[in-house]
Length: 75
Image (cartoon, rainbow, N blue to C red):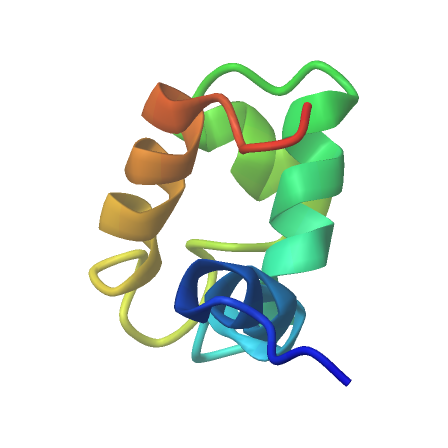
């Protein structure tokens, strides 16, 4: 059995990583919103509920902005 590269392991773990800690909204939900046409933080927020927690997006907005810039790998 061959071992996966560190990059491949990191990508596999993304599905478990919360983007929004307040509501435990994970990467796949944000990725899906972007793949379905969300192009701004506001559009991602409306589609997922991100930015609506106690921190008002302080933690998740930078992550969402980075994902929007990257265009979410694999799209």
